[in-house]
Length: 261
Image (cartoon, rainbow, N blue to C red):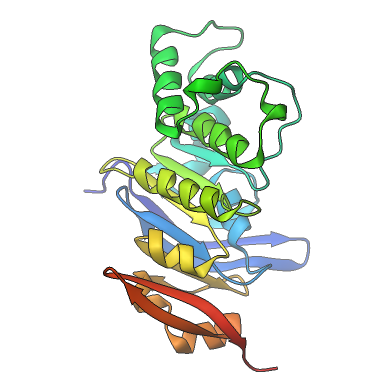
């Protein structure tokens, strides 16, 4: 019997006009995993996330448990997938607490007041991301790293089984990059999972349980970082060689030279 939170993607393709950006991808995802979605620029990573969110026209199928996502209303899908968009842009001068509260919208009717349960989820999300102390500050006045944590709190407040994040560590300084990845990792439990689009291969190796490698729209590798990030794959997909080392039982890699030029 299929677990009600397992995701099955079968023969998924996404096209924009004449261009195929995701090409016949099939995979199985389960709660309890932090999945890194990696590949070169334009490989189709964000398009795969958009397909899960119902924001792309697809062929093939996506199911969660025995439910076809194509049959679900937008609000119902939003209860299954919380989304942390790329860039961390906030256009409205809302308070931190008000912005985090937007994460509860999929669980409320229009103009409905926050319930005690909503308020509890908001508090838990703010505590998890360490932003309680500036709940009354205006989000547009925060630093980039602080704003990234607020937006993550909004996604966590949704209490969705899966959190989809598109380059959440991009444009952050090293402290906030590590902080963001650790917060995403802490979100993963036996009943929740995360799918994270990434470009930093070292962070992907450090924090992800599983890596999916997309190249030219195709899934070319799927497995633990130690099995996926081979010298051959780095050369074939990313056109790089990497320096590797271990420290305290952890493995690290840094791109060193460009290959094939």
